[in-house]
Length: 301
Image (cartoon, rainbow, N blue to C red):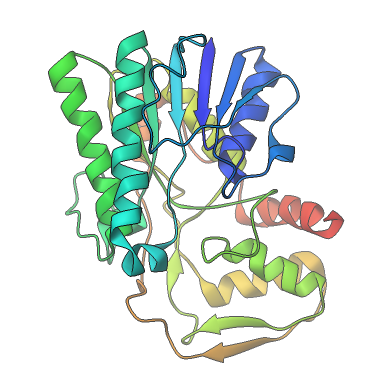
């Protein structure tokens, strides 16, 4: 298939592009390179240096995609609080531009959305029908992007899909941002430095390996639309994650505790039952193996 991957020079997007190229698909990466790296674009994929905040339909005229995997986004929660307008331009206006381009060429859109930031505080693994209570502009902008997909499906008879991702980790994750706690922990261990745990470390997240996430994107192709959680359904505390990182590296590193960050969720996990039932997808890579693969990559960086 002719596939466009927006944000395809980033962590998840470039891993997806790798898989698509290996499958023999015609792959076009759209990225403004503000966060992603040109070196992450796989050989065999064409790079188009474009900003999704600008109209894309004319620029993709030579590509005429059949599928658009939309991963380009502003993903920093703190940045969204500091500048919600910039967050909305990237995540809402950017999604509209992708939808308009896809509509011109009859392409399906598969959107990378977010689970924890949309559901808010979870007392159990959240299902797609649970209340959506975002506590940051980032969560709200992603929820708005999902609603635009649903509107296009009703308005144009399209079958666009939104995937609400858990906390994705794996090789190629940036250890210098707030969204990459696994990469941060492992890189601190590699460098012989202490890691920081905010609060007592009891806050939980649903950590899902990037290899499994990529399989979910591929599984969504051809689906009849809708929203699907992409997670494991398993809660892991930050404290448990730190111990697991030390175990996989075999290094007895130290962590220091700092004051909790304002607005941070205490519990977050996703119920993946709908994705398994409808898409035939479920997470296969357990945390120990996923951490082992990530450590192998971090150690070579």
